[in-house]
Length: 265
Image (cartoon, rainbow, N blue to C red; front, top):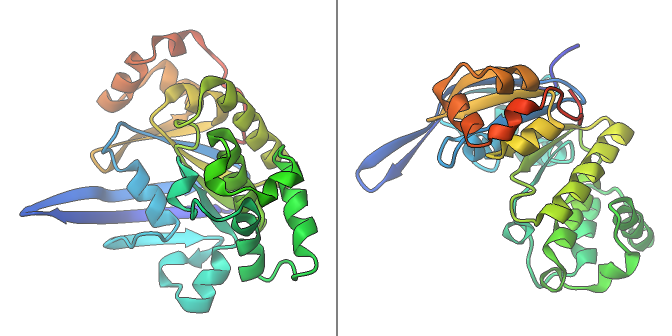
């Protein structure tokens, strides 16, 4: 099966004052259709930079990204806007991406309108269906984003992401701002959506417990470089890199779990 996503030799540097920081150092990564890949690392490891480069929210300095067999970095204008229907991102805190005073209706309707997936007359029903799909009441559409809970906002973010029927969703720390009781429900929702649609997930997280619960394969990034990759249960049971060993040591109970639950992979 051909890769859905292929990243080769990706580099990105930032200038801070007189210092040059290498955020990505020749990163290679692949993701298959319908797979869940966990990209794990400590704060500052480069994982969020990589996710945002894949989503074309920042431009890398070098390397290549192929998505659905096409050169993602060569896309501009109309072609890039059309691609965004197929590749979505969900952030740790949806207020980063949403106008907090916008209504839930507007947040979900925007991608449907931009990509011409629903007309004005069809829009209320389309938004209601998406809210129901993520376990929310259609009446929530009238509320402002800042008026609803964190768990509800994350479900709205997921509804917005799936509105365009993407083949890949980048999940950038989607659970870390939520309490434990809400996390489990969001994970179950993501699992259901993947089973229903075949969407692939690139899950960016520092939490090996979440990675262990949902991903069939794991990639460890440290200092902007990929230092380890393999089946999740293998990497967590016998980490080979210093970065992976540090992450596993911080969650000792992972050693006693042999089979991760499945979202893809």
